[in-house]
Length: 409
Ligand code: AMP
Ligand code: GLY
Image (cartoon, rainbow, N blue to C red; front, side, top):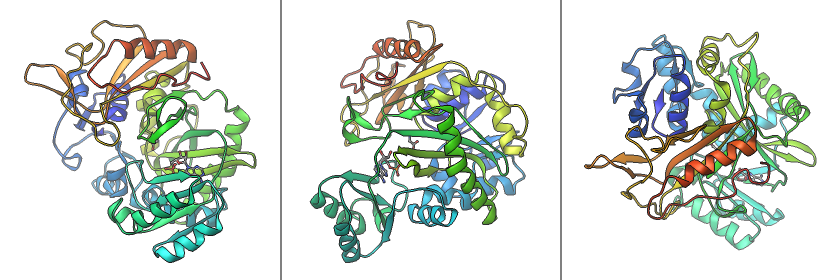
């Protein structure tokens, strides 16, 4: 397992139910949970299966390096990962695949971008072409703010090289869903649909963040709607990948908006979502290793492990997140294993940004600190457990939304 966040903690924890797992580099919470963490680069390790967690190594072509060594990998090569790594490439790809998405223009010239923007109607949507840690998208009804954002991005001031090309999009409206699809190069299977909460504050207010919580399954999405997404969005995408000679083996994460004109794709990611993974993997019991091995080996056909139950995850973030997160606040409520000191049924704590201080206490060490996942037979039970667990963990300046999955549980 490659990576160091709560997503990788959740994946490693789920894989460890049926495999020996080593995480590089991992984090102190994963190690405390009894899962081996090493600092050895993945290209110097040997394993039956390599799973790449974060976006950057996938986009940088780590899967290509590993496959060149004969390794079995979950994660597309650099060619497939361009779907996430460049929004301009994504839009061109979607157009040639005839996948429904927002109308758009791509610009690196300020005057041309501003002239195009003036022809659009609100809400205005401005995206950096390159990776921006989930923070490269502005959605605003204010043309002045949108114009300033275009200038900040194109000048390189806001996001460096990632922003020197921007995609300006038609604003879409409707409920959003995260549909992660496993792809073995030929066969696809959708994982349970989930929903994440990107804004900092209750009621979807405040700044965009990496995600403040999530739940699965997204019950508002019917089986018919999932089928519609698979037919109208995923299937033509896979055909286009094949047409371009891209052997995509990994997770294809579709960020979808269910508009009145049907599902439209907002983005593809070439990896598991964070924090959606923290609510997906608990639903697959000990079946995750088998599932991912079959992705890597190109054997996804046939019966697959089924998901059961529901899960809700609540993010505990540090003081000042997302602009200027503070580090070093002592976390109360965790035992030596990094889990709840007062064990609560159906709750697992995944570490995103923690460290162990000289006294052996867990302290905050990043923006998002912990993801507290509750599982249960229903979303209501999962939600109650997640918030009961979260209430037992305290630190100075803790930031938490109180309405994750409230409307559905
Ligand atoms: P992205 O990283 O492209 O998924 O964008 C981040 C967030 O911005 C999405 O989850 C949506 O909430 C919002 N967004 C992106 N594209 C659009 C669009 N065309 N219309 C409205 N909202 C959008
Ligand atoms: N939760 C959104 C993402 O992983 O990109």
